[in-house]
Length: 423
Image 1 (cartoon, rainbow, N blue to C red):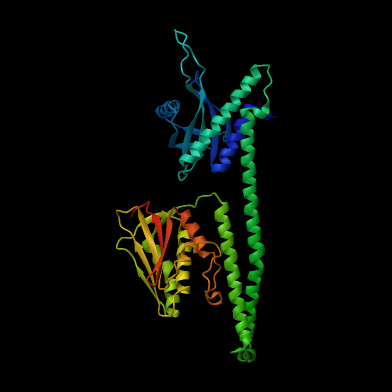
Image 2 (cartoon, rainbow, N blue to C red; image 1 turned 30 degrees about the horizontal axis):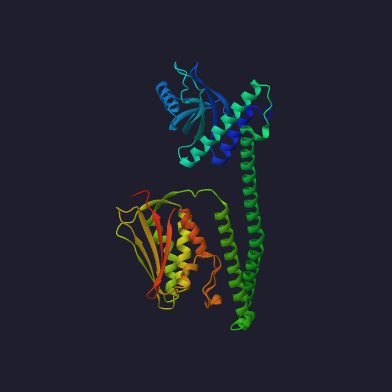
C-alpha cells in the first residue's frame, strides 16, 4: 500500500482531483525518460491499461519538441480501447523542473534553466472545451506536485529531518484536502436544495390537485354547481388556487436563484436559430394579450442571426419579461418585442417594451430580490418579486447584459447577447 509521502500516491491523488474537477474522460501523469526518449506513466485515471494512443512518429516527435519548448499542446487523435477505435481530444501540459546551476570556465554561475520532467495528459471527447484558466490551474497544480516530489527525494537523500508541516508536500496535501472539502460542501448544498425543493413543492402540489378535484366534483353536481354560481365559496377557491400558484412560483424561483449562485458549472451552449425560436416563444403571449385587450407586436430585424446560447435560459428570460409586460400593461395598451441585429455586429439585442412607466426612484432597485414597487396591487398582479433578479442572473450566464429604461410612458428591457456563430 502506498503511503501519503509516496510520490506515486501524490501523482494518483493529483490526477484524481484534476479528473473530478474538470470532468474529464481520463487524465494521466507521465515522466519523461530522456535516455530512452519514452514516457513512463506514473498515474492514470481511469485505469486504461488497454488504451493505445495511435500517433505517427512525426506527430509524436512534434509533440515532444513543443513540450520541451514549454508549450501546451492540444490535438485530436485516434485511440484504441478493447479493439475499438475512438476519436478523442487531448491536451498535453508540460511539467518543468529547474535544472541545477552550472558554472562556466570563469567560475561564474550561470542562470538557472528549466528541464522537462514530464507531462499531464487530459483526455476528453471532441466537444470538450478547456479554458485558459483551466489549463493554467492544472499546470500550477502539476508544478506544486513536482515541488513536493523533489522534497521527497531530498528527504530520502539526507539524514536531516524536515518538518512535514512546513514543506511543499504538506502544502500540496493541504490544497487537495481543501478542494475535497469544498466539493463535499457544494454537494451537500446541492442535496439540501433538492430536498428543500421536494419538501416545499410536494405539499403545495397536493393542495393544488385537491382543489382541482374539489372544483371538478362540485361542478359535476348540477345542484351544487347552481348554488355555487356567484357564491363566495367560488371566489375563495379561486383565491386559494391563485395563492398556491404564487407560492409554487416563489419556491421555484428561489431555488433556481440559489442554484445559479452556488453552482460553478457553465451552461451548455447550443445552436439557436432566432428566426425559429422567436415565434414559438411569443405565440402564447399573443393569445394572452388579445384576451386582455392588449396589442402585442413583434418587430424582427431584417436579418436574424443563428447564435450559440442556451435555449432553456433564453426562453426563461423571454417568458419572464413578457409575463411582466402583460401584467403591468393596462387594457388597450401596447406591448412590443423588437430584435436588433445586423451581420456586421458582434451583439444582438432582444428588446421588450410595454406601455407602463416606472418612476426614476425605483429603477435602481428593480433587479433586487423581493423588491416590489410601493403601491402596486399585489393581489391583482401576483408575482414573487424574484423574476427580474432571476432574469439578470440568467442573462449573465449567457455572457450578455440587460439594460432597463423607462420614460415617455414606456418601459424597455433590452437583452444584449453575443453573436458567436453567424448564419
